[in-house]
Length: 192
Figure 1 (tube, rainbow, N blue to C red):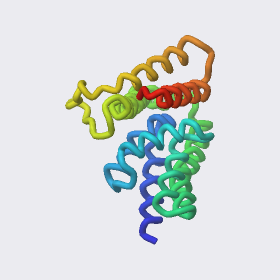
Figure 2: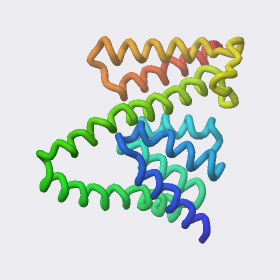
Figure 3: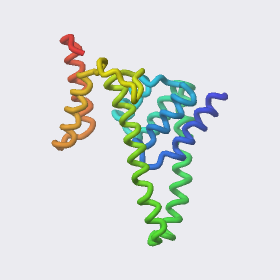
Figure 4: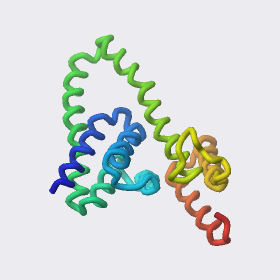
């Protein structure tokens, strides 16, 4: 029973402070599930992010469901997901009421514009952590990276994916499928 409470509280906190959407929630999820509770490893967390990108729905909800199910079965998945959603439902309802009442107030516009740089920093922080894990392994630490252990294949797949996403009209899902197929083909011929 205690695990269910821990799951709910942990993901309630993620849902409560995950301003800026799914990518901004990644460092919060990482802090709750890896740093505070040591539920999955960093390697599993990287896989969780990948799976969350390939499945329908927001990253935070997919992560809550994945971690909750891993730690407490189906009831754990449902409880963690409910914990993640509850703050949003409460906050959005309150904000909708306030926004409709004060939408032309300059103070509200100022607050919303001030949150943008912090949101970008959260997204960047999560991205850097995931890149470090992908390029140098799950035990790599930012600031103490062993460049001799650089995974060139992962960097090449990353660059290819960025180019495809930025220079073509290919969406995220086809790029992820293509990267997976390329990695599988390379593994079958003995590379990577």
